[in-house]
Image (cartoon, rainbow, N blue to C red; front, side, top):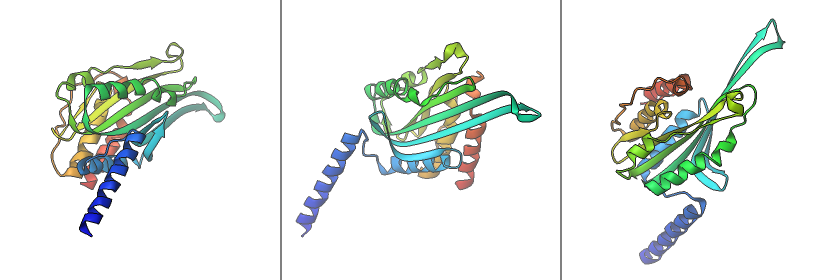
Length: 232
């Protein structure tokens, strides 16, 4: 009976691996799953969160979307002076090992297919198209390419706003988070929730970022940081 059960378990594992390969997902470790679940749960208060999300032919482990609108009126709502909209589209990926080729393909996807999430209009100011990768291991030569990743798309010469790419990689092996310049605002949120999920300390040191665009969304992610601290 043990032999039969073992054979069935192996077939089940192989079938699951095949399904994951077809979907574009890698089978995550227990640690990666714990971190992903914790991060997605933390975003549920402010974001619309979907687990196992399919978009443009690719399957992601999770997805979160946030929208903010600000308007100014004169006396009555019919006389609107202006409106400003900001948005964030977060794609979550899980990897056993993140190498240069896989990272380059993810960035290509984010700056092409994922960019279709943005809807420019006269009231659109900023959209963040964000990639968060939870990896058991990150190739040692990948830190610099991650940090140097840059992308901005202006719409109608900026008259209809712009979109920036945020990148953050949670490296479980080194208990750290690597980000590009625009992704620095994600660091504390991801570190706090990874620490809460795994019970170990993550390196939260970050580079100084002073640009106005990089400060966008700070209030939302600060709220997520406070929530993670309360849940520890």
